Image (cartoon, rainbow, N blue to C red; front, side):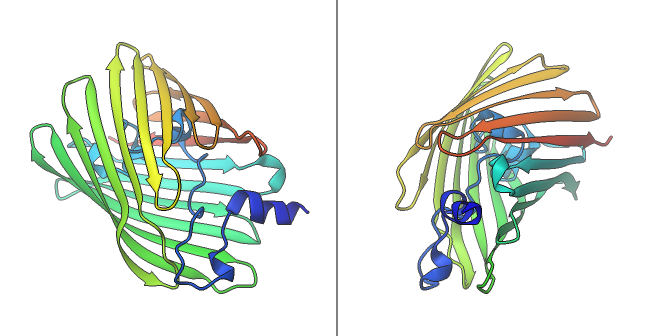
Length: 271
């Protein structure tokens, strides 16, 4: 029964048992991985390197090498595992982001690898591009994979107010797996120690989902994050302790129909 529940409630993947031409809805959508999960998994806007994997236009110039290793225990009684490795570096004067994510168990698994960079159009406006590799595997069926291209944008209207936008999988090279496009638009507003994040996410054939995140930070040592996703009713919270070279965080995600997800991450910043 547990295995059936994992396949039906968590994965929500049915493309492997119907013709491969039908897009995959529900795959690669686990919301509880990394520090952005504390603020409703909003990655289209923000300042943490885990958010740059979706929107590389968020990256700052002359950024130092950054390594993040995260682990998550999704829906704890279901025996699933999730993890990610994120590397932020500079190549020939250009910032680059590399990200590897895994989610699943011995029955079902997802693997996603991505690399992105950004370009400055004019003062306050940047664009980003991300190349993604996605692989899906379910026991008893052949692996399916695809390569996609995502585009992103960042507009810094003031020192306090920013707007970000992403179109995922705008172009796709299929090898048995077709992923639907996903649209994100979000805003960030900073006021003292508080940062308010709001985003709208839309995947083809699925309803529009509003997401709200709040980040409280001392700017020097600690951060607290809270989030809410309206469509799924998911609540999240987390804390992060950081210094100039090292950071550690813990995140908890509450789903109304599924067990609690919890996880942690380690970050290393090189000079």
